[in-house]
Length: 132
Image 1 (tube, rainbow, N blue to C red):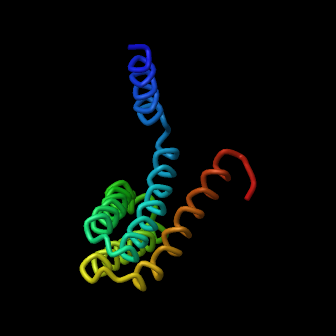
Image 2: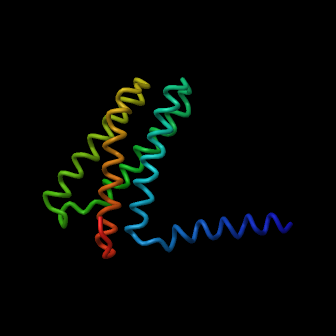
């Protein structure tokens, strides 16, 4: 019983850490997840694990769909429009990679996904008064 209580407490903490995270922190969690899942998808392609590749590529796409939905193009202007085009490109290339189970396409877009994560991380640091 005590182990279960600890497990429940941990799950409560985990869900609350998401519930109480700022919008910026949630965005950082999403882009970190996109990097992780895209790399897992690429590894699954190499391992010839079609199901795992599909699941992780879909998770990565879903993150970018979420980023697209939450991107305020009206407020962000040209910068946000360009970011939307990059997100759209990544989603389309992920679709190609998933259909073809193609490692080369994953190798092409993973650095782009990492750049997006790094850019958002840098922006978050700057917004909090830190330095690059």
